[in-house]
Image (cartoon, rainbow, N blue to C red; front, top):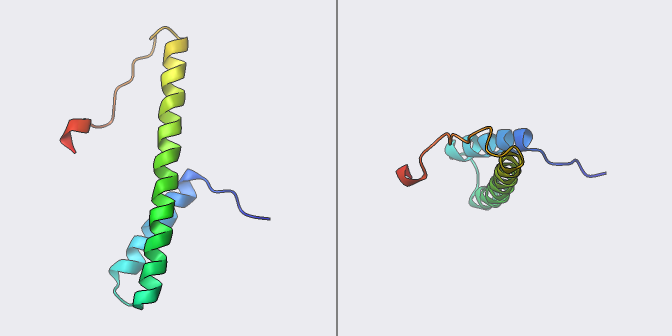
Length: 78
């Protein structure tokens, strides 16, 4: 049975991948495999966060803006 992904374990795995690649102790083939896994994991995390953002937006609308969204960052900064 396949283990279900979740955000926290995926984020931890991204950190592990980054640390492993920073060591420069892997072969080119292993680095490519890690990079591919990292990209797939990052896509999963980004998609998960987008879904959560949409859910919060829906909840905000359902409460007639009783609770306001305060973004953690300014998109224009990036």
